[in-house]
Length: 163
Image (cartoon, rainbow, N blue to C red; front, side, top):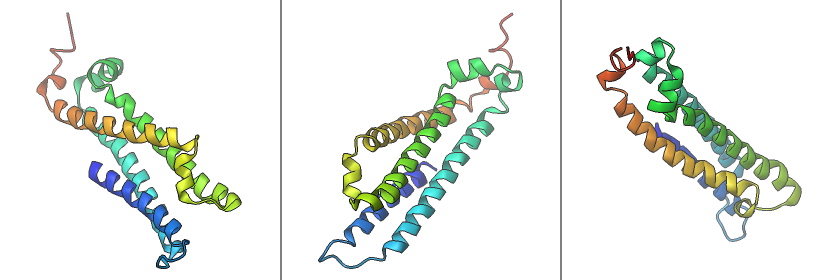
């Protein structure tokens, strides 16, 4: 899932640049409508991947002892803080894609700017940078959490019930 998300993200950036290059003189004319449709398809696929990731985390923890017996605060804050980060990553993804589509479609049509101007935009660039750095950190913690949650201690009550 991580590789698909990174791949789709790269393809979306490539599709946007191709549509910008096709309007330049001396460059082979590329069908910009096709590139726009491909960009929207890959954004939709990324959205589906992020939703699958949220469900994946739910299915990772739903059989653990803390989840079954309502120790969610302990599970999320002490053992797997990445469970709090996944919804935040989803919100950052939606915000970044919304801003990207907004600046490339609505604002771009009004000002006749190109996609390169998006990368000097003082509103879009901080969201873009935070989202991409945050995604790398979240995926690193995701891999660690997926391996860690397989330990038997999360399925037995001895660790969780201190009498």
